[in-house]
Image (cartoon, rainbow, N blue to C red; front, top):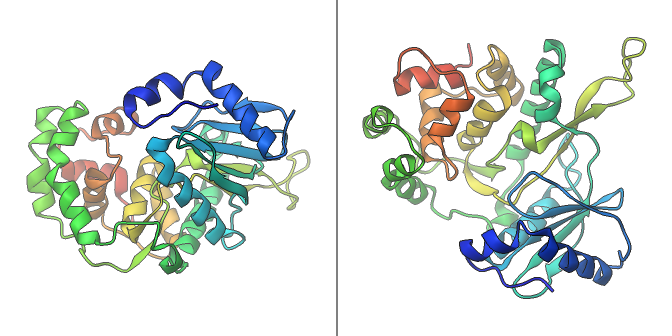
Length: 318
């Protein structure tokens, strides 16, 4: 019941339209034995995702993104029960119709960390950042080999070269001013990135928006309702296998966000530090890099240089 979506034009027409999506989702739920279950579409994210009843999440992938469904299901299966923070458990996955695929998974408890963050006291922020660092370390410690048939890139050096070849064009297309654009080639010339690093399983979008928080039963002050802790990590469809430093792009931009002391705390928990210029180079080469957006969202140094930007966003203070 869902129409074919094989290109961006079809995506823009079909995916946002609930009048088109909802009948297909209801039909698929019926096929999965969930007829009559309540459905609520999540407003965030690229793919159409629905809460099904109280305990399940149904994520759909049109034909244009069908490979991402295979990645999501395989990575979640690989991770189940192996991280200090829960990840969704896959209940079912497969093909629907007209090229669409789906993953039906458990719904994790808790609140979006990005939503909760502004009201959190410093002590809670520090503790959650420590937990996040430990979680990323555990993810990177897993053997990615069993996923090599569905995750790329096969050649990390070639991937970096390809990203570098198009970096200026991509940032211009996103509206980056020429004062910043003209610095990029020279900056990347001075940063040595490993073309053959130890390869680890990368989330690639390790950010507050993909972390959940909630209260546990640990001792807390009277009336506090338990200690705040991470209760989930999700969204593995963009996963890759590559240099561990690549995951620290999301950490610096979307977890610690230039807040003094937090990136150093994260790296302490992770067990390794990275140089600011290395992380900014990976930021420029990241698949989803959008420097104009980051400049609007994050603290910007008074000196308009990439070196100053690296220090502002990725200085660990160590």
